[in-house]
Image (cartoon, rainbow, N blue to C red; front, side, top):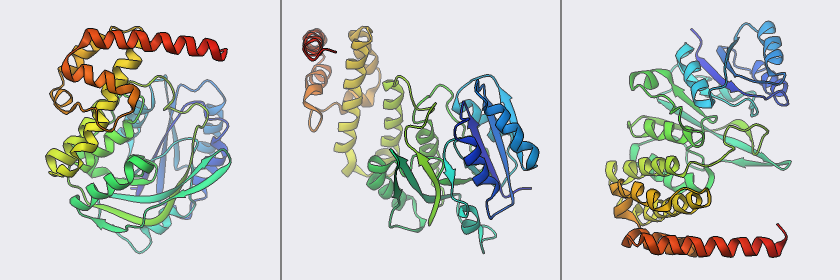
Amino acid sequence: MPIVSIIMPVYNKEKYLPEVLEAFISQSFENWEMIIINDGSTDQSASILAFYAAIDHRVSIIHQKNQGVSAARNRGLALACGEWIWFVDGDDVPDSDFLERVFRNRDDPCADLIIGHYEQLENHRLCRISITEEGIQSTAQLASLFMKYQYRTGYFGYLWNKLIRREIIQQNARYFDENLTLAEDLQFLVSLYRLGIRVLILPYTATCYRVNAENSASRGRVDYFAQLRIQLLIRNWIINDLHRRQYIPFFRKIISTYAACIIFHGYESHIDDAFLARKLYTMETVKKELDIRGIEPALVPIVWCLKTEQFHLMHSYLVIRSSIRRIYRKLKGR
């Protein structure tokens, strides 16, 4: 049985695959399997994958119609045999010694989830993203580190700098929400953090993450309702589970901002704003936590109207603001 199962969804990544797969095959640590889910690629990805599967028996390819990154990861997870799972992307280059460093002199790391640092490549500029804290983190310590770093760097919400014990995923029936197209990795990881798992932070670089890579799964229209639910999940972990009440003002700001974005962008997409407001009001925590303090000035009227249930006034504000935006665009020649 391999120690690590590497799961890689692929959709139209011909530009990056040779470099990425060469980096995996040349890993100094050799006891792994790679399960690649070709999620309906229409470019030359399938041919490239077939070549690497032919030259390395550890690489297996599964072809399916395009169903999205979450469905691809779930299928890979169902096929995995390794003790540890490493979810990676088809455009990010792994560090050639990451696995070797993790498992060197560690027959069984005393953790359920291992986190490494990562590099970020954006506009040909490389930046290393790391934190100073290392070692096993208690549930309380993990929550503090999450709040310290997640909203600035995304460190605890990405998959590709983490190894997850497969047993933990299986025993707790954790899978990716196939309805999500953004931050599905964050939701998945927070659902694991809430279990009180043992998290080990190591000072090793896991991968190089390409920002704005072509055919990125995170592109497209944002489902603000889905993103709000993820933030509520995090709030429930931090506030309800761990009683970190000092973060209540922070989450009020986050929840209020997402609620306002739901109304604003819904109106811009010709969705009835009163319908959206009533839908928000079915979410008791949202209704309770709405607060105008600390949010962007343009969103304050929306949140105030939501809080006071002045939906007709909110609609008037949206109409006026939309008219001003149209005039501004015309003046700018857009």
